[in-house]
Structure formats: C-alpha cells, structure tokens
Image (cartoon, rainbow, N blue to C red; front, side):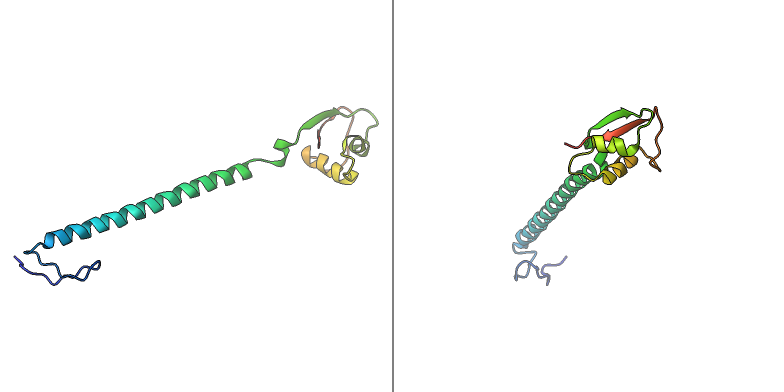
Amino acid sequence: MLKHTTYQSIYNSEVIEVGTGGWKAVERIQELQAMFTRRLLFKLMLAAVIIIIGCTGMVRVFAGSPHDEIPLEQVVVTKGDTLWEIAVEYKPKDMDTRDYINVIKKTNHLKTSGIEAGDVLSLPIYE
C-alpha cells in the first residue's frame, strides 16, 4: 500500500499525502467535481428548455396559414357575373382589382378567371 503519492490536484497546489489528512483533499476534489457536474447539467437543461420553447413558437408560426385569420364570405355566382365584377364589388377600396382577383383565384384554387352560374366562391374580407 502506498503511503505517499505524487498526484497533484489541478484545483490546488498541494501534494496529497494519503497517510496524513489527504482524504480531506480527495473529498474536496470530489465535491468540486460534483459541483461542476451539477452546473453543467443545469446549463444543459436550461438550454434544452429554451430550445423547446423556441421551437414550439416556430411551429405555431409555420402551422398557421394566411387564410386562417382572414374571414371569408361565400358568394354564389349568378348568370352573367364575371370575376372582375365580383372583385370590384367585394375588394377593399385601396386594393387593385387585379390583385384581388388573384387572391380570389388562389383562395378558390382556380387556374383561370372563368366562372359559371351556380359556382360558390369564397371571398376574403379584409377589414
């Protein structure tokens, strides 16, 4: 069994002598290691919580679509109606009619501006 050791702590400059109170130094080293381990664990947990909260917010941002928040009005197309006339009637005053027609087409998944009597169009209502 060793009476003396040449191990030198990285935390202090004393040489640990096992036979003369060296166990206190070993215990101190173990306490310091435990403290650093707890700090590291705390920092990792805090980082994980921040990342989870951040990602949750991002999911909400990307999960919504622009149509979820804009109210829609259903309009039944009658004989002789054109998309232009409907757009002029329902568009906001400060919006260009062509832009509103594109919004109507996108909302209703229309490839062309052709509509027929009896079609039901969903028109976004901007306030």
